[in-house]
Length: 289
Image (tube, rainbow, N blue to C red; front, side):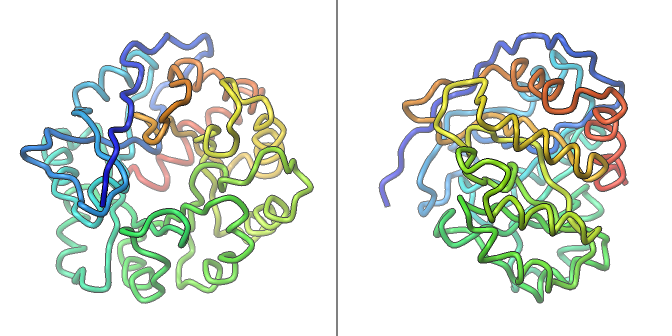
């Protein structure tokens, strides 16, 4: 299939105005390249110029963040070799989340756990053709490692997938990017109410990330603020923050500055204790082992 070049991130993030607590996490970034060594999946809709671990660490240092969760994105499909090499080089800086399949053996999962992988990821049907959908058997097998199961919906997809997610043999389910609910629908829309219901189960966490995945607005994505605030007010101990750097698929859109994105958290979670939970305590409990 034909692939497009995803625009690069802003490699000069502004230092956030917000006080960032020691030990803060970014719970979703992606890394790519060089393409000659790590070729893109031919079924990925995009490819990227090099976005290195060193550039990510420089960005994190500027923002005052200590650790990052390196998440498999669509660019590499089911191939996690790039992640393996990154975890081997920077074991104290990164943990990982992979796309697994039914062919991924228990022995392979154990090897990946020893390297620092701490979760698997599924996507909804509308997200990408080359990525795994919900696989109950795989979700059940990673429970032996206490890995969360991550899910990336599209639009109002959560209404269609909530039942399958809650039926998984997993006590840790993480929903990416504010569940991707359409921000213009507000906090009364059925998909958002379903997300609150899932949070009440005690098995679900949400990433306060990717506001640009919920709206086509320009930064600072004002229509997302009521949704993020409502989530924090409902269950601050089940929220995490992520940059989603380097913000793939922002073709024809304004590339956000990551200092500005982090400062949005001060608007979404005005209480300093809540921000500590979101940035430090919760991600450390899920991924810091």
